[in-house]
Length: 352
Image 1 (cartoon, rainbow, N blue to C red):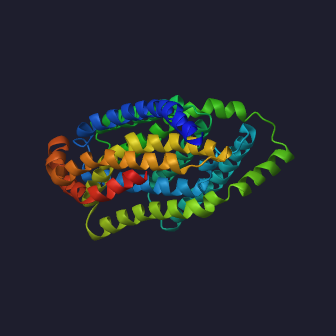
Image 2 (cartoon, one colour; image 1 turned 90 degrees about the horizontal axis):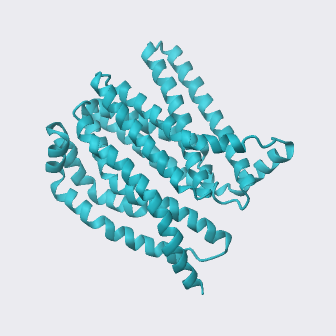
Image 3 (cartoon, rainbow, N blue to C red; image 1 turned 180 degrees about the vertical axis):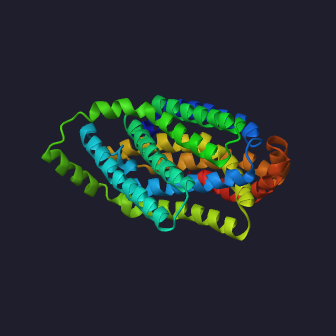
């Protein structure tokens, strides 16, 4: 009976939800990768490298801000309890964002930084804020099975990000254009989740609701205890890699490395991430019903392993030539780096 139930859920709801998510993700990535050959001819590897550092720092601070509690949103049985957790996560994030702003301003004043530095601090704070809400909104939509909303959010994010990059590139804005494109696209992607948040946020904020919110934080403490160190170590690794490459070599080399890394994440973004979000929704339901998770996990793992073989094998043998042809001769080094990273990112895709 359990096997029959697993098969029925996997073959119907799971695949339908996956199709909706993957449609949006594929369109979003198609926009990104179709414009990539244009964008790489408007910005240098050095400018891409500087933006890569900014993006990684934004992700690192956003991870600290929510303490990975956003992944607990699909778990509570009642929506009102889950939304109490949503509001508490926002409060936790606000504290981190304010500390980032204050710390950045104090440092700038202490070492007499120029105006450009303060623009970057404000951009960082805005980027973290929008990324936090984007992640919270995505996981809230996973809870409600609103996968179409997630797809629309991804598509609008990708369209605005790459469209703005082209526009800023035409005006020769350099790194700051890449940063502003990133921030504005996060804001536009987040707009899909604002209406539901504002509607539910009208619920009264009583003393009992605050106490229940603390209970929800305590109940799901495994996320900051078990998941946060793992996430921070990954993000910190990415930051350290950026700083080390720039310090020992150049921003140009890091830009080539970062571009290669982004391009090789295409299968992860199109297939792995979509499967991950639907899978997380499904195993949350399994947990509530005390069903075994392993059968669906095993099937998904085998599928991802088979899907990864062809694309990563091609990159492993012909990465330099492919990158040089598609993105321009300036990015040949990026292609050679992709050959080195292909086996690692293949494993990363399977684990996604």
